[in-house]
Length: 108
Image (cartoon, rainbow, N blue to C red; front, top):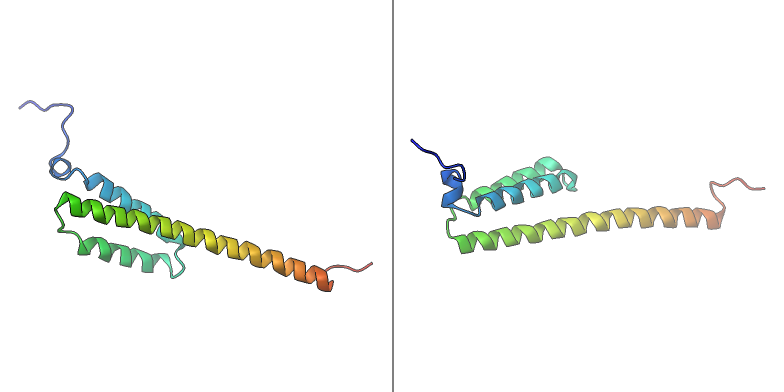
């Protein structure tokens, strides 16, 4: 039996998008660690969404689902950015307000 060095496993040859789908799942799982409702909640929802589409075999349909997942990644990134921005803004204005009222600072 001769095995070529450049062969790919049978499952990857059957669906070339498999690697991309797995990477999408890993990226979403990583981003879900900071989800406001908790990582467990996000992981359960992510798993159910992927399992719902488990039997999709049409490459065009898989591509559409992957593109949708990439849009979700962008939305999560935006949500996390806005959350951090609002925290920084709140801290800044609290410090500014305290400064205007001379609260929390020693007076001379």
